Length: 99
Image (cartoon, rainbow, N blue to C red; front, side):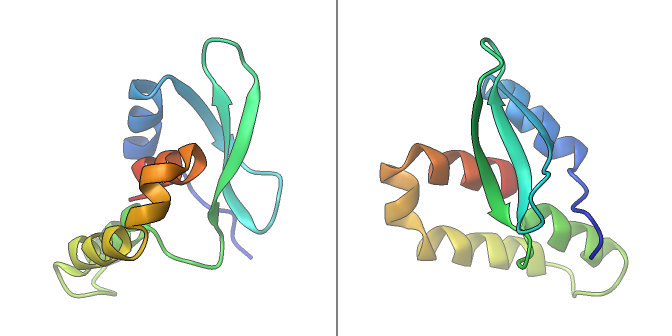
């Protein structure tokens, strides 16, 4: 399996949230998340079996998906996970970084 490539946009979002992110050492996850101030590990986000917004965008540019697929998938993700995102810090950060 090809390791997940963290996008520049994801690094930028992490910095805005006060986080540091790194490629994961777990094959079933995408990103390791740390608190930027303390350097303390927080959690892993993103299931490696599924696409995310930035992956859809990259594949749109390659012509694998039609234009607009990434935005549509992002909209559907937020509808599907609305309650999780609102109540869980991990879900909120995962949504911000990946969607």
